[in-house]
Length: 236
Image (tube, rainbow, N blue to C red):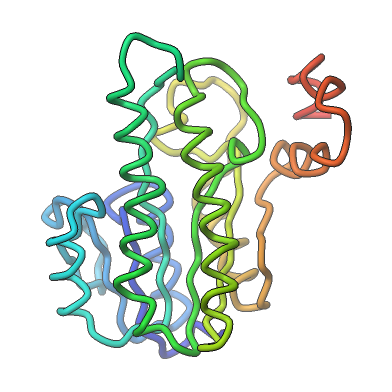
């Protein structure tokens, strides 16, 4: 997959990683970039085509797919975190996280998959696809674990039509979702550059930072070793 002269679509492109993806796709020579959001009037990226898309709304997804037509690159970036514990007073926010991070990603992929033969999909997952850090992130982590499994599944199902499926896994980027954490963070442009380099190289997973690499490496070991000292396990 080479991005130059392609038609691409990015979900959640009004800010953060999504905005950086749209800008980077243009810089790499994409012929057409659809930058989507619930409120396309909030998209301020010169050169893109703003498009309304609410990934939790099947009617919105259907309308966007009909307008775009054939597609070469789909970036499933849109996601939410509501700070929902699994055993809190309500499951409402956990459902919202799954409706966006899992079902929204799946439904957008289902709508565009027939148009992506020979193209590529990149799903933005998380280091929290593979571990849990604090009760307030547990709903999000569960939804991202499901999105990782979704990514692996659609990769198999799209093999015959030669659609490449890549996961971008990261822990700490300088986005609104991480604004409350006073820790070193990767600039979104650096994360996106790694992701698109990996996409063009045909990689199945792009691991964007050291914490994510450490989490992934721990999966084959006794989890007690990891959870005994999470900060050390993440950052050493």
